[in-house]
Length: 566
View 1 (spheres, rainbow, N blue to C red):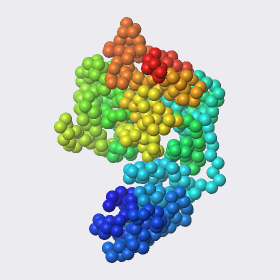
View 2: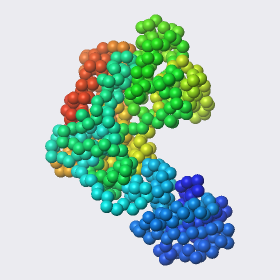
View 3: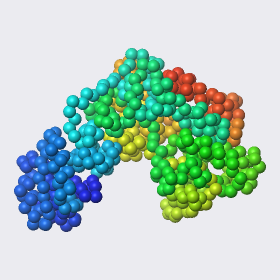
View 4: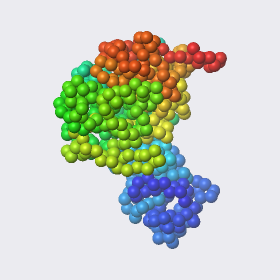
């Protein structure tokens, strides 16, 4: 017997034999629900036989037969009533367990006990793909009647940097396209600017614009949240059970900042000296804390990878230290950088120039330290410290201020979907960014599984790759030429006010500087790189990247017939 736990009260299984009924009783189950109709298979015991064996074993049994493809609302109600009435725990079965899991999912949706992503994730964890009934789950578990699906040629999920850039990129190449962007937000943020907000250089308002003002001309926008995908039927399910059909799908919703992943963190953010540049409303509080700091212990944290802009945690630290150095109070500051990973930066060539600033500011480095709990009012944080041998201990740290970077994951509706790899990120080919299973789906930005740094610079390079490959698949560009993404990412490391180490790299940690070393030496702090970050990159973002203009972002290509790269 292979029972897969779905909830506290229910486990599911493939077809049980008569002998396995006794095993179920021995395993502690109190009831059986049979969802497979009699006579469906030659080797299948009838319900009467199962029921008789169940009685011998002291179990109750309930028969709710569901023929394949004919699961009705009445079946869902009967299943929900059985779960409520029968002694628990219950084991339910059909031929494979799929119908039983589907009945649970729809009854849970009818009850309103869980969100759509939570229900899908539960099924997925047990090995059952429920995406085919996602719309029905979103409809409260009831059969859809008269739901008119909206259809578009290209659906882009996500109105962030990647989503807008790829839509603009496609339109820059082919005007005659039916594109819709789906995103529930009102405001679009230039997130790379929050580091400078946290240093008092930018105002928060410089980093925000109304999302509708950025949607490319000719692109429709649906203001709604996505709750699920049904890729086998080329459908996206929105909140409120609205179904949008597509010919081509581009998935770019970004990632989830899991603030609740650190115990006590949501309750203390923005007060008690606890801040983060990873949120629009908190970056100004970072500057307030830094500017008013009189000395003491300042902690800066970095969670396990992958995270958005892996250099941002230490950027905040360097700029803070530079401010305190300028004020003459740095010697009275105990600054510690607590990193969950094993090193300072993922690209080894950039570590030596960064270490010069670590030493200059007197920063203490602690590797293998992952923030797990914080009590802001007590000014105390707890870290799980893992040694090189894998042994771990809980370490307590006191602080006067702390800059926290939350753990980060793919959004719930992505992790629960059939689009996700085992890691939870959208599974794509790292070179073409096409989905590894579905030929008409692409992904880009922070949500994809490719092993690149999750930065806006990466999305800038990925957008034309997806645009050209998707249009080639549609027959609007030469299908023999495939655009290739090399893993490019960039991290302008703000090591002091007015100077930046401009880290640029590709897959495998290979340095790929955009400028000759006589102009900007990427291994040395540069004033010109600071000028680029402060003055040039924001207008490049707003006026070029989001409008389909691609300076320094034209992709390389592989000609399939010849295998040549250009």
